[in-house]
Image (cartoon, rainbow, N blue to C red):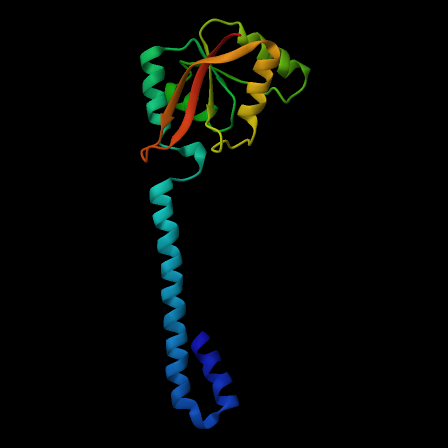
Length: 173
């Protein structure tokens, strides 16, 4: 259809140059197809290299291995993308909680209660990889106000070696 439209325009403007117009229209269509293929290949290459969205990072597999090895009592999730994945992979055998220090008073009180509970580890994406942008910083600021700091920080890389997920326990300052 695009080629016919180009030909119609060329015929209206220059009927004597119709033969040259066919070549131009064919070239324009071919260039458009090649351009579209290059864009598609670029997106596909980026998907292979970077993976899908951060919530589905392959850095989750080293986290799963760590959980199986160290058996934390509870994982307190600080960012979106962990809760359902871990619940599925561990079939409810790992206690999970969601921490939201930017929420209402009950959310903050619950977060405060996790700070002193033995065996609780906090899990989040690394800075710059968060889905809920700023969730880690808000929690770290909350820790500082409460007189705590991260300890035993574990960083988990994706298959490209990029630090993507972190887990840590907390201790008093």
